[in-house]
Image (cartoon, rainbow, N blue to C red; front, top):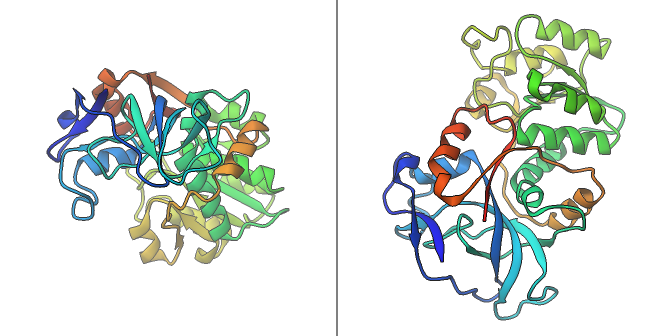
Amino acid sequence: MKALQFDRFGSPDVIVLRDVPKPDPGPGQIRIAVRACGLNPADWATVDGLLADQLPPLPRGLGLEVAGTVDALGEGVTGVEIGDRVFGPATFDGPTAGGAEYALMAAWAGIPEGVTAEQAAALPMAAETAWHALDDLGVQPGELLLVHGAGGTVGEAAVRLALHRGVRVIATAGPARAAALEEIGAQVTGYGDGMTQRVTALAGGRVDRALDTAPTGGRVDRADQPSPAGGSLPALIGLTGDPDRVLTVSDFAAAADLGARVTHIDMRYDLMDEFARLAGEGVLVVSIARTYTLDQIQEAAGLSQSRRPGGKLILVL
């Protein structure tokens, strides 16, 4: 099969497309014929050496979330059959991962009718992160939540899940995503000058809780000036009046300095069936910005690392 691999750490330039043997599923695993593979900032961090001392020796594969058709079953696997459409996390501790014609999975859920492979592959990490962040923040039905950075994949998932839970949502996002977020029920304002004042006006007073899903150091006060110390968090703390009512999924250093909360996501993937149900009902959607083929991986990495991809980037096979 064809698969993306890297055999040294560095920038995405070290990723190559090779012909390699198909992986065999172990006990409790399945193998799928991959139709779509979601790309994430974590992919580039892994290529650059993240978890290098915790994973087997190189070469390794790329791609953490996949969707496709079941091709082989490992020992002890039940509840799924050859030919079923599934999605979920790909195993990435071997010489190949999700960015390949075939991939192994140890957790999965069926793809609902009406959901494409590309849409399914966009869900696992964004949904998992957003779900646990909302739980850790303690957002309750009827409260007012500010989601900062709602134009990103985790931010959009958080907005959709919060609205589904009966939470009122104000979202900050750029103009490219504002209309889509308003359409699903969020009140939206942009970044830049006066954001704090605009959020206060929309809220009619104080915000109950705030979730920061923007990239580390995301700018709040001016779009053309360096962010203040702590990035977005000082403004979010000011809007809620309490650092314990602010949680970030990215700016851990600033949170430690300012007393805000953080979510270190332990990707358990025990909610895959729930994510599938919500996707099938149209509640949970992650917008797809662009699709690429395996041999376009460097182009995809460049857009991803720009921090302005405009949605999920997907490899299609």
